[in-house]
Image 1 (cartoon, helix red, strand yellow):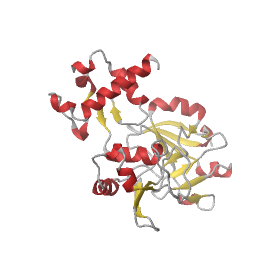
Image 2 (tube, one colour):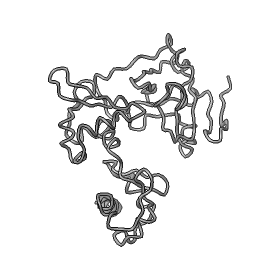
Image 3 (tube, helix red, strand yellow):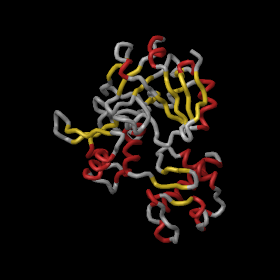
Image 4 (spheres, helix red, strand yellow):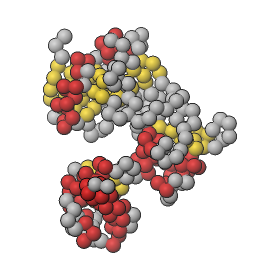
Length: 280
């Protein structure tokens, strides 16, 4: 094991200690949404010699995606994010097998250590409160056992998820198709295009978040908005589908890419500034 990997694992163990009750032994103040300032955590003796950049590196290396960093703050991811990780990325790694349609049996999932303090009512609340409608709960048609799934966002191929084809015949229903990203990513995207980035699809919203009926398809914190020429991409053979929670999805071309030539306009979101407009 390399020194950097050992360092990352050591930091992750310390963070786990802190968030699983260690913080109660300190005077560190919890911020809104269960965040803490990283700088204050690093003043603890347990974190002596650890830098903010090393915390960032350790969190990014964590295969279980247990922690969420936002600038100078960090938190343990809440149950809905553990739910997203299991259903979208970690099911097979953790020994689960998807039923057709991407469902997992809820009783089996709740027996997993990631959900040690979570019950069925907690999962119901998470699903009901998720304004992006990322999850669905149902009774197994054969057995009546509760099952849960993510509606989209998987990093592995899942059979049986219902999508609606987006094609030239119905493209007029989606006059605005937007991919949201961050300023740090724009330079590479402007040169190489959009890529699946380890997921099965590239994600688009049918409008800006907050507009009528638009609840998902990009992060609310996105800084750059890329407006797609959907009809041009369809004419060139790129396939698109619509998920049940109204996210437009594409596997891209044969290389998993949607090239920059399909970008109609690109805006910085706040303040609203036009970055690029394609010459027609």
